[in-house]
Image (cartoon, rainbow, N blue to C red; front, side, top):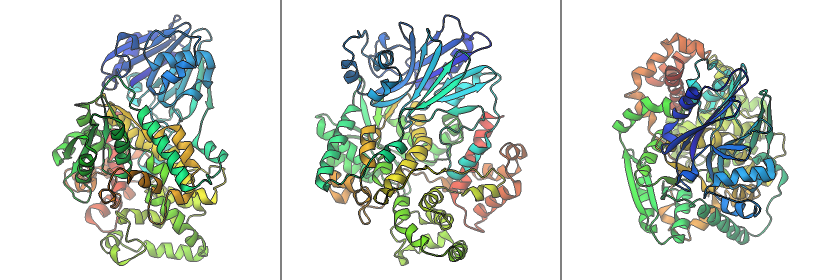
Length: 634
């Protein structure tokens, strides 16, 4: 795990000082060493900050050179020993996966990635052919940005490296602004800047000496869904195979020359990873949990009970108002693109706590997308068909009536309404359902039920109305609707929000985060599962529960899903109030993002004076966009 940067320039030779400034702007992500490489002609430069995980000696330094090839690499290929065994005609001088990747590229070319299981973003310079090859892992666990303008090509693990360039073009991408306001993050390939991009997961990007880009896809979750057929085997046989796949993936991600820990929330996913790992190892697994003083949002007591049951070496930290006050001013630095997921704050804190004891920590992200963990999956599957049966003219009328319902009143009185009784955080979910009521099809319903604002509502703020989920062009299989929704989230929410959150929060502390549910073998297996094995009745993640209850008592797990959320509404009504109320009066900010002053002012007034319900996430998005602007655009 490291941080990487690079420059390819057609106009002049690379300035070593600039390359080092770009590299060292990401020093926190690679605190152990720093090196650079400049090509013979001087037009190509690679920079690397190292976080030593495998082969801690100087043999592991990068950029790594061999024959006519040079690699600069961030991530882990967990099965590198297996890949090495497939190359008996090659000699290896280090114990690193870096050397294995480079020589696998020499042997198989771009097909080398077909042999890799892991998370990675790397650049390989071919000195002979004068070509630069960039590659990002299948689901985008590791970040990779690139920039092309005026004869200059840059790449980096994070955007802040580009800001070291004096003439870095900061023209705003208004499509990205629209996406951000809809959902609170910006998915690949979009970037907040017009001339910068994210390399999509599962893609190569080749750049020749004349800066001609050629992008090719080697894997996509959409293609795997379209090419696969539903698994018709019996439930017991499927469950047994799934448990074996989980064990294999979890154990593979324990490969390390430094201590490894686990983020334990107390939910199904992290408890399952911890349970299967603890069964494999005699020494207690180190587990880490963050808690809140709000009992409705605090899962720390449950995590502690599970840790005690499994016998882990458990640590917990409670998030206080002082913690928040300290971190919020850093938020725009940590997430150097507009980022609206408030759970980035507790993720940052738990990563900081874990780094005091370990250098690598596993988390359980991806299980919700693979095995049907989100309420919106159940809502789409159960409600859309009923809504579809209502004539459009009546649906429009019902949608208008729903807009008159106060979601806070509904949240307070949900126990009286059987249809919504079991949904927590109903007030915020209800506003999404209001938008989804006018959906054209299941894809559109899921789109609207997933976003905080619809494209039409974004337009009311003056911003560009840009579609969040373009149609995939594939047939939605009747009994695999949940897998279809999962693949959309893997392409967007998982890559743009969850992976970004975990990567930035952990790397700020020089901690490597690993995602055992995101092994592509597991993903391809899960895409084939029928809906009934993902959501069975009212039971989400049905198969995962079935395996987990072999190791953890059911009563420790069965409770409403809470998520890793932070009480940001409380902060906005308190310590952040003055800053937020300044937003409608900052005319330069509004002009930069093409926002309508009256509309923004009205939503702030409604929020603080409670004249009309406003989803607090929307206000938080405006606030994080505002703080990002003042950090990176002024």
